[in-house]
Length: 279
Image 1 (cartoon, rainbow, N blue to C red):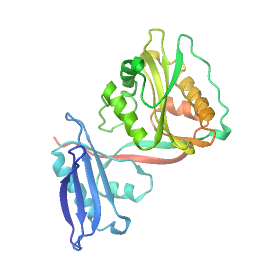
Image 2 (image 1 turned 90 degrees about the vertical axis):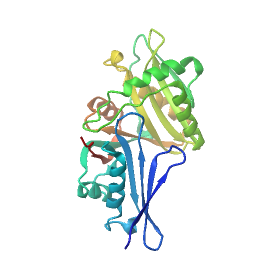
Image 3 (image 1 turned 120 degrees about the vertical axis):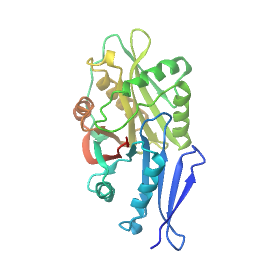
Image 4 (image 1 turned 60 degrees about the vertical axis):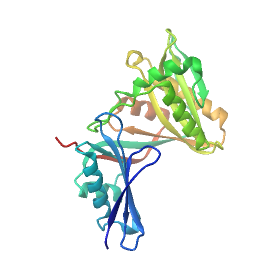
């Protein structure tokens, strides 16, 4: 089988894309690299059709992406433990840098409670944040900057109000519902938040997007209070919702402890592999 690697450009973001073709022109697989501004790691996504695996397609796509990265680290997508994706990463010599455990909360059996935290109040909103909270919400996103990422060459995202609106618009454009619960401190600033996304019809399982508390406000029980309050809000608004899904780094012991206490149970694990930066 002759494999041709065609280099393209993603028209939506200007990032490089490669398509592998067989000698008869049929597509075999793709690779995509998202390189953020600066010199941080780029995100790498390689997909090979199951019928075309173990024939060198993924290796050729990886070689093209590494060459284009010009020495920059490439952080791959999480692959399920024991999957063909993990086998490829190991065979290709990528380095394992992070382990994630995926969990699910059965809403029908949820019965946890949380104490309120003195000096704070909770607010809930759907979709994009209101104008009067937008700036403080953008500042509160720094709560995620120090989440455990082990050896991954990960650069924290930079958030502003425009990005908050853009993310909310993307979720709405998919026909899904973005739900946010935030804790406001005595100074009127958001001290922590938790987000999840629910299908437009309010059924199936919702997906947590993230929970964070700013360092100065940790150790008070805010994360647990936020999550319990949001779960109760979601159950009341979406009675047909079956469960909530979360993924947490194995090394993030604080969040794992909260989730375990609320009844989240493991479903599977994924691993993150990386092509290290070249000196």
